[in-house]
Length: 318
Image 1 (cartoon, one colour):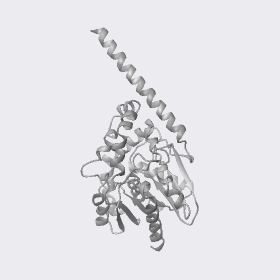
Image 2 (cartoon, helix red, strand yellow; image 1 turned 180 degrees about the horizontal axis):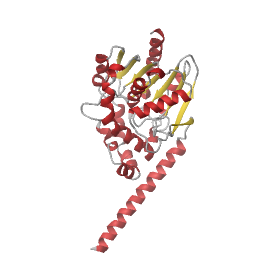
Image 3 (tube, helix red, strand yellow; image 1 turned 60 degrees about the vertical axis):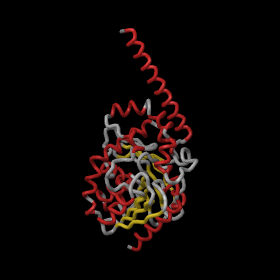
Image 4 (tube, one colour; image 1 turned 90 degrees about the vertical axis):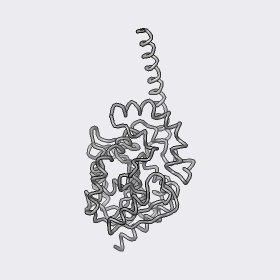
């Protein structure tokens, strides 16, 4: 019996070693194929990767969503907006090529502090924050905690309230709460499961629109196959359970102008629950509904660019 146990233990070790090596190879191939294209700055112990383009009287700070990266904006929006504005797109702590400080919180308040520090360090003045999905929640947290550093918010399919039915099932692999178990999963099963579930996940995240064929490379989607990126995304999602309800209670103190763009057929977040709820609650919030899904910056970038430009114009006039 003891020999059998040793054999089984050996087989388990071999399987784990193979999965670890496979993950390591995939992560390395992704990094070689998609190297960082921006600059780095260290703030509050976080090594942040950001891309900057353009110039103009207004500055835009682009904040990606859960599991996203700078390339989600660089795909099309960043270059177009840079024709008229100074535009900075940043990988949130732990995402893309940014590294979160050891032991740092993944809360919205902590990420807001990092963004505020970036605004000062990069001398962005009082930028318009453009936040997509979870990036919208981070933008709201920044406007509430550091109102003097933000001129207005242009939010695309933003997360504003805890979904009544919980996160979409597509995010189930991110809900691991124990750090040690999260790390084991990231370095063994995450990559093969992500590859296996790719089409199903893309259909939910992008649907009813189609994911661009070049999303894995040009859109940065493949960067999600890196264990460090998965761990950061998992921490971001789990932290929301405790911090988003607190943020919701603070919306009455929001003084910053807010414009929201939502796709009517969003499969990740409910436009009524997330967008209309803000309009009903806060006087200075305006909502625009369009045909489309959740990933509008990638599926309808020109529509998003026009929305941001209208938001800047409204800020100027207001």
